[in-house]
Length: 187
Image 1 (cartoon, one colour):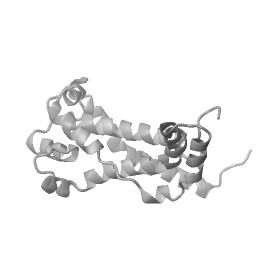
Image 2 (cartoon, helix red, strand yellow):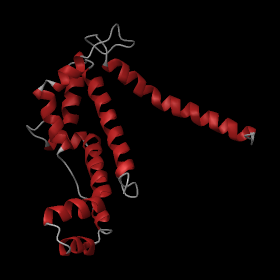
Image 3 (cartoon, rainbow, N blue to C red):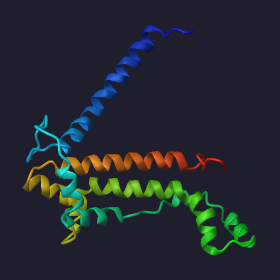
Image 4 (tube, rainbow, N blue to C red):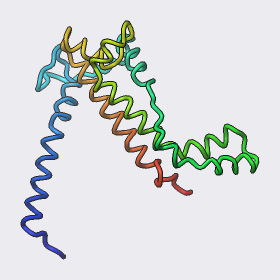
């Protein structure tokens, strides 16, 4: 059994404290998202799913969400690793065009597609000013969130933020599991 040196132990403790400090806002956002209060209030007076229900049942929220998610940028760097010969081999061995694309092409470019989707989604939040001026009458999710914070401060924002964190975490976990080099179990 090896003992940790005191300097390493101190560094590990400091890193754990920094990590806990960075995760604290997530704990607060998730807690507020389940609040029964009509306004942002911490700690919440009670528990409710009303803000998730409000978000999921409101076209005013879902339309901007879908508009924001539709933006996908293909990463050219991911295509440089694409081996066209493998697709041609699949076609030559009798696979149909769609089968070759599904089983040969998409697995090769999946990491770049996932990266592009995350990049587009995150940059839409970073470019709020651009989205506000160029969006016109179209309401993107960042623009809707900004308007909601300005006009009415309720925990719907916390619910949406919590859902986004869960969605991005799940997608990152899936990308890590099934991305390049991960493979499908049993293959």
